[in-house]
Length: 294
Image (cartoon, rainbow, N blue to C red; front, side):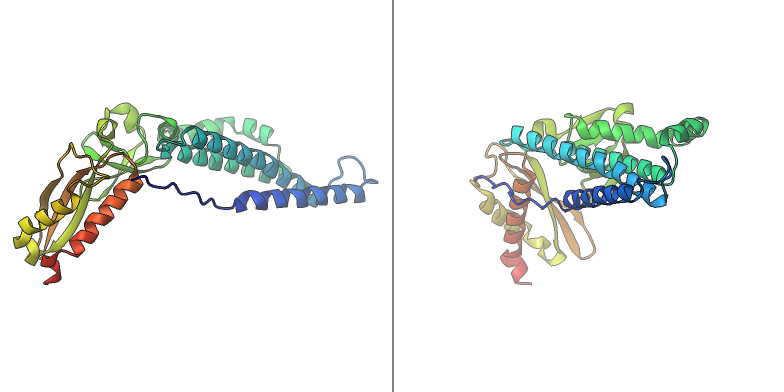
């Protein structure tokens, strides 16, 4: 069974608003310069500086958005029949956000009459002190960019970083967010990738995933019946790998609940397919006669 790809695309409101703002700024600059033809050269008031500052932000930002759209379109076209690696798209989006922030700061400086180049050169020693103070964060950010654009692992992969093991949920400028076996979120610093060995557990077992759920303690005595009912549902399932038998086990027994885990192997590594199979299993559990009797 093939999972249809989501074809709905959101309208680029941000790009449209920036383009509209750019057109308005260009018109205002032309009108303003026509009104100031008789002024002395260089005699520009605060309105002219603000308009030029805004244009210095909008022009590179529009070009950057266009480049981002083209790069992602080419990337998705080349991987049309494959699972698109989410970290590459994430890396492009984060890089775009950083560059837009730099363009915005530059535009503000121009608007208030500050030369960005002279400002940076005059703060050389201050900048060096800032780099020293925020060295760890800067190296983490650079490491984050490396992870986003690398092919070693991607969002959704299961990795082992030191004593931590889990699925990558997100990659930020400072850390990798892992969801471990207990569904806890563990933050692993990006620098850890270069300082310690990282094992990609999905490199050879990318089709593996788990389904975890809790049931009332009163259903614990019906463990075998529940296992047989779930296994009957999964038997000869078209989206499960028949060469790997599902493993059903008890994780924890609490005061009034029992926590279970079901290990499965799908036919591919699609997260959407894994979610679909998980929903099928959970729906079957809800229909289990032992639960309905309660």
